[in-house]
Image 1 (spheres, rainbow over the protein chains, first blue to last red):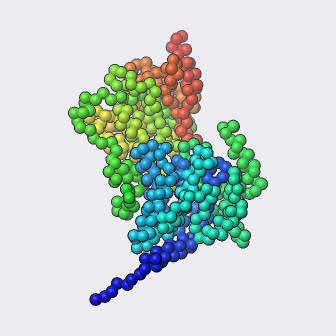
Image 2 (image 1 turned 90 degrees about the horizontal axis):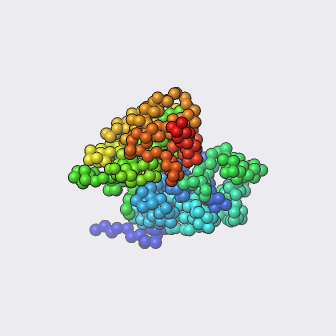
Image 3 (image 1 turned 90 degrees about the vertical axis):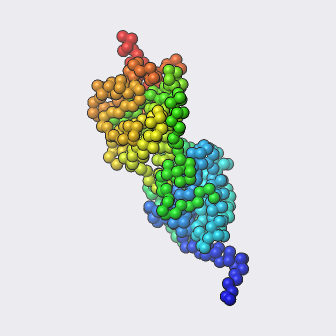
Length: 243
Length: 262
């Protein structure tokens, strides 16, 4: 009679967690941060077509790091869940918190019951009617949900990036400054990131029904140039009056 | 989990109506035949669309009727489908509104899942499938006949589509009209139409068409200055779907009223 190998549950969970963490650490990080007119999502992503940041619903965005096919599956599931909920009830009933809970359930289930955990970390962001209502939910590979207020960092080397963001983030940043904070935190002291290396999208509080907007490379480059960022800010604040 | 991941074989992809079907929420159910013939459901009436230099103009009155009664004076029948297209409906108001809602959702759902918008042609075909899906209900009297118009970003021009009850899709170059007053409205546009009209002339023509339709067809509502209710008129151009304001419409209808008075 053969004896099955005994593996202690603690050991099994630890192995899975290590496996997932390793997978995630291989990828590049993403930062989401609250600024004066919404939430900015900044991903280090050299690809122009494979997205890490995307729209889920009117006021909700998604960001994922790790294995692309896995977080993209979660993204599509989020869009489906949100659209179905909005169709069955009302658009106002779709919120980030319940979506984050669903993701937590899914990831937790997969972490404990499947052969292999998902090698992803995701973020669900919602822009509120007022800055106080902005929400960031950071969900880990094992279903742990962290509710963050100011900014959230996903992916490898997160501790160092959080530390750098802690030092520069402050209340009421403009979009240009927020991008500066994100890029500084992502790059660190010995690297420089240009608009070319970034994927940037924002949830703008007053962008009509669908708040999500992608920023193209030219706009990111303009916002990252310190002197131009100020005048760009003036320009955009002047727009409603002239239009 | 109410909706697990789908396997590669049965994944509905970016199709929202298919997703509804997969999870047992099929839209537009068929009603028993004897029920519908007894029903007097609100009907929406005249809508037109015409192409002009920058894109298309869509217009529709706001009256809904149930038999000989006016059931609504403020029903919006010309609605944005997405940023660059609009849909106008005539027929049974309930199923028509549901169809528009699903259509709008479908376009947005596709855009989010795929990360790119459908082509205008693709949108027109989607609507065609929805009209065809409504055929059993149409056979029982709940007919929905939409028109679809939009700005084709690839071809950089406005395009118009009209449908029949079976989902047949027909592209027109100059104008389309649907609903009970469509004969009168369509004729007015046909007579006044010239290729490459400017915005002012195109909006005037649409407004005139609705005026004449309301004049000749009891189910079509005209301008209602007493309550400040004017038909819905919208333009769709390279900058997107844009409603023409009530002030502008009031001025244009006043001009027509002057002509009639004189």
